[in-house]
Image (cartoon, rainbow, N blue to C red):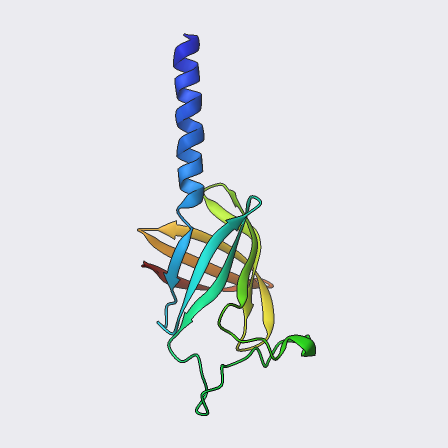
Length: 138
């Protein structure tokens, strides 16, 4: 009986660990304009922009975070910008994190989950929300 309980416990732990890791990787945005790479750091999940369809302006200079409310960060290139921060895995989703929108300079609370192999990214502002569907890529 103890062996059965141990086997079930090991299976449950490894299955949960696998589920948590599904988010890790490169995800193409819904508009296909960028790729965000999601990674784990100290038990929390983060995502940074690692590819942009148009990374540079017409003069060849990298687009920067011009709308950031912190003026000192407005010179930071969008490429490598961390836009997903602090997610924890709970109840088959990643929650308690934030998503930063470089187009508006606003940060929103966010929940992420996987449905049919696609990443659902939902940002909240008050009682309203918007959900995007991202596709895993190589």
